[in-house]
Length: 99
Image (tube, rainbow, N blue to C red):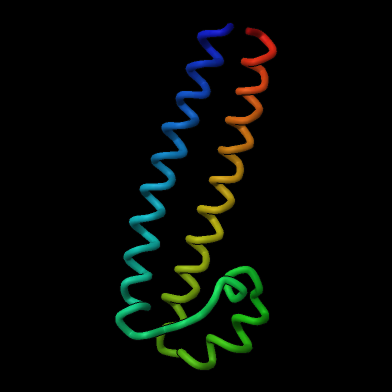
């Protein structure tokens, strides 16, 4: 049981690393396009859709797809990291209990 839990935790760490690298590559690719074209918005726009639609998208209509793609990748990577951290914490707690 202990070896299985250690294997699961190690697998989750590897999954977290893979998710981080995968989304970093995708986000940086889109971010490069936005940066070259001087598209600016803040973290509040990433988490507040109405603020994004009111302030940023009308200002940069040509880059709507890139902005939405960047924001969706950011949200998804945050969600995946949160789930993986919760799973690692849960399995780590179980490991501490069985040790």
